[in-house]
Length: 508
Image (cartoon, rainbow, N blue to C red; front, side, top):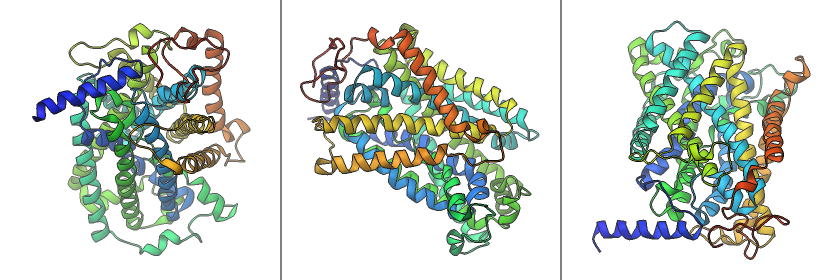
């Protein structure tokens, strides 16, 4: 069989598998498995995660905060394994929303998708806002809130323009971003270890004297968890574009796991090289050195060298924003295809030659732009944006792991090409337990001297986001407009009890 006819056969098989799930795709399968992994990696983005939160992590938990990259990496690997089983059986565009729909039903799916979408749009804002100071340096702007906001909006516009050019451009940008980021991270990290090493490895075990924290070291360490928790999502983006990848049932679970392995190793290496290159931890912790990453880069590379490093850093931020925007637009499109969202006809509209949903992408740029502009009123905008976004993402994730656990208990046996077999239940329970632990850590109040609403800001903002969605869902009942299949993971059941059975397409 020639390569061309093999590809045709593969595409036909993928189209038939999708048709059996009740859908015909308007996307083109132009994303290779390699590009799919690159998409997950650039969304997870070790450079973005570490450079954005290095100072926050160090101030909060000292050098031992690096252990969160190991702890969270293992926890998120469990989640990736559960998601791998689900996407292998339901390789549908949009990620958590269609997965929750098939595992449980329309209402659960609507809420999962809503929470995840709000968090995703906030994450895009967090990423471009985090890039602001680096781009401002590169362009020679005066540091400050206004230059950060201007640079964040420039990056958003660029990401939107590339995304509107189609899947092939997105795939190419993901591969370029991945290559630049990985080579850059290894090169910068290696150079720092060779020339700017001011400490030995024992500092990552140091819990004494580095952090002045009233509650002893454990509470300081728990407070530093955000650097790890913010780092390890992105692997699910591999599944968001399931209709753009050939042989998705085999390739996507593999790409998800690879994202965790490679992204996690790179993040730990980047973080370690920076930790050993900090000359004075006390100066970072007391705020004298407010931007330790830039200080380290200037010391190691000088003015000219730092500019080169910043170009690579900006490529990481841009490809991360691209991947996030792609994920958000696919989720909105998936909602709209099932008629589950206001303005469905607009959001499921495709650009005929580019095969992407333009209006969904516009929303994925405009909402983050509004959040970035709103940061003018907040002094700790970055931490607030990231904390809220991360809790929302985790909530969306674990509504899916909970739905999977519920489905297993009701008799669901994953039937895709990738399954965990008899380990499935144990991995699922462990993934959910890890998720609850991570969410409690994120939401726990740590500023007793501030007013209660500031102290509980993360939990409150997540509750408001979920509450608005719940009120809208119960008042407007968008889930009743949809006739697409739902709740069919468990054989012999369809949709939630007491609701009309879905009519479109056979169950699997």
